[in-house]
Length: 200
Image (cartoon, rainbow, N blue to C red; front, side):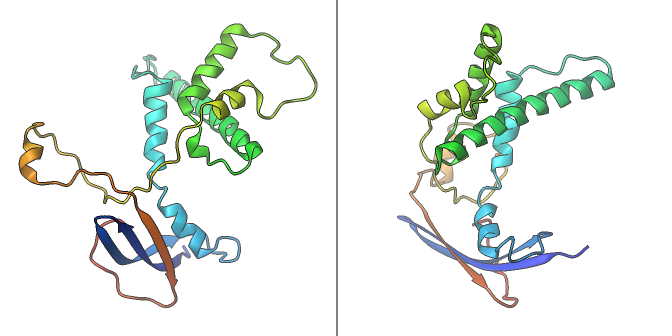
């Protein structure tokens, strides 16, 4: 398999200090004109969004309930139904933010979309009343009326959370403050040496 290596220098600046490191990203997106290196590196910092997606499915859609089917085929059907509902709501969110122009889809609340969709199903009034389809619709209007604040940049390295006593954290001396961060990305030509650091 052919892959593309993108080397970059990332600098994270906060009021607590500045950290710079050289990193390499590997991708199968080979066309550098269609997928510029800078855009791929910027997307790398949103990689944790997949964890939010799992949380939305498990907590918001399932409500922390377990799958109920006793037969594997029916469990698969439940999973496909959950993924279909999730995808439909995500498309509604993206269509809404695209139509609004300049709104990051991260600012639209998935919980608001789910609750509005539930309300619409219960009411089922004028589901298809006109031939003209409103791209934003009721769900979109609720989303735009209740936009969340812009998400802050995450700069902490990934770590496994260990179950500790709530009193143990005081003795660890871990800085748990939240800092406003800025990110600087420079794409490097050639193959630089990697720094021995965690995630940027």
